[in-house]
Length: 453
Ligand SMILES: Nc1ncnc2c1ncn2[C@@H]1O[C@H](COP(=O)(O)OP(=O)(O)OP(=O)(O)O)[C@@H](O)[C@H]1O
Image 1 (cartoon, rainbow, N blue to C red):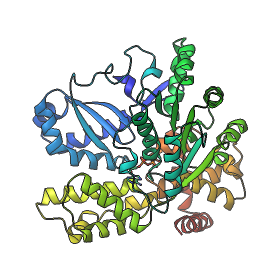
Image 2: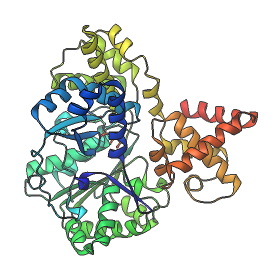
Image 3: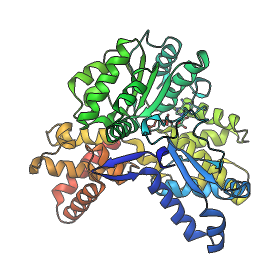
Image 4: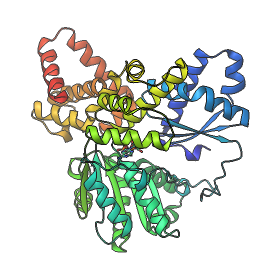
């Protein structure tokens, strides 16, 4: 089961996002439910995988599944959100129902054979096209129709929760629809890294290469996390070349353009720019309303246009947050037994400030801080220990915590793979210094204002 987890190997210690999420969910239920409920109905559930907000949970019986679906789902989503994982979608699977072989996955210990299955919901039909994503959508569709022929690689970049993964997986699903025997693989760059590390540990690099270099379509998500990973970059370079030489399609996503990815080898940067680089920008109001409308129609939820307009007006950047807001309103209505109206939505979304945090990306913060202190973004995410760089780096970490929803480990990763304790230490240092240093307060306020404008 552990094979399906997202693993982050840091100096021999394996931390999983899934573990920390599950622990937070369990703690929340432990506090709020009676001991007997917890032990009988909650504790037997086991997390299986977390992939792009899709949380798969295994339960032993149908009774458990019904109970989780009817009584615990909303609380689970809220507990996850409180722990910094917004927009989690739980799926419950009966024990024994999940068969890795039927998922096209082998049962041996070699991690690279464990593909993350494509999410069937992520297809072109469910993707709402608007001003901010129409170019990316057109390019993705063209690539899905003629893989390897037009834009290779296709590089999609943009802020958090704007639909990069949805679009990328749509290419995979469309291609499989047109040609079911195509060999399609979706991985995050972290999964690629872990697969590679496992293949070295298991003396199976040949198998790894065979797996990756014979694909028709490689979808690789969040490529920015290849930053600082020399060995994996080299392997990816060779994988890229093998696929490209054979006219096999490569699609990548990132939160920034290739040359802004810190410590990415120049030869990779130049290859990433061989094809087409397209941006997804935050949706305008009309698109946000259209996304909400399509979601309620799909889920057969009865919500009036005035409420949808209200919700879309409240969340103006991140589509994952937008979907989370809709779920929150529904949950609020279910719990209070009141119909969904704009007034109820305003009550349900009272604590919205958290959502608005994600307006700014960590990369934008790093860039602003670097510009402000006249150093480079690479300095900010690098390892240099001189004071002129260390303090701005700590300020950037502090602002990342203040202005985004990122957890400490996630912030650490954005800063060249630093440990979460380093991030915590930086934040503590800045907070302490701010108590007595007016200049620093002023600088931080200026940066905040700039980033929020
Ligand atoms: N244009 C769209 N139409 C319909 N749904 C969308 C659209 N864009 C995004 N979504 C939905 O918003 C949610 C977040 O999208 P997705 O995970 O693809 O974002 P992302 O850009 O990959 O985020 P991250 O940067 O965190 O990886 C998903 O549930 C997705 O289906």
